[in-house]
Amino acid sequence: MILFRWTSLVAAGITFGSCDSSGILGTSTAFEHSAVTPACGPADGPAVAIYLAAAPVQLPDPPMPHVRIYLWDYGVQDLGGRTLTVGENSANGGAWYHASANVYELASAGVVRIDEVHPDNSVEGSVSIVFPSGRRVLTGFRADFIGQVYICG
Image 1 (cartoon, rainbow, N blue to C red):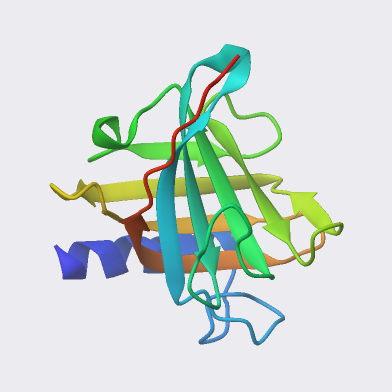
Image 2: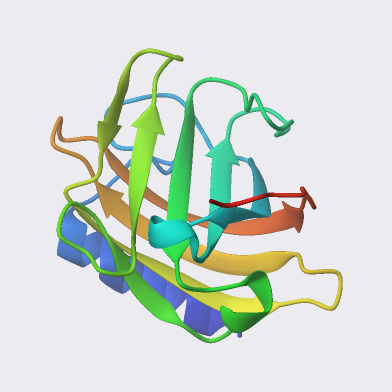
């Protein structure tokens, strides 16, 4: 499974361009921490938020910089084995790079692959995301589950 994940990441790297060892082209930030949590999607439907950060993720205020990925119409347990697109025109969700609380950009395109959802709702997968500024995020992750109560609507 690990070989398959890295093979897919290499293929995604060829698609989106090469990156440095940090997983982000053009920066020294490495997203070594991640978290997954339920969220509210469009029309108050179910959604999942995945956060990738350089420091441990604490919600509701994740550390800066971070990438926030929203996958709409899914609960955490629904994600296993799925590959979903994110970006400006995606029906699956979006991704944002947050440099600070007031400086962020929406991904132009990207792919999120969820390899496995564990019994504790932690999630393993990989992302390949490109932003209008030229920033590219290509990394694997194991996101710890952070349960939050959301009242959508």
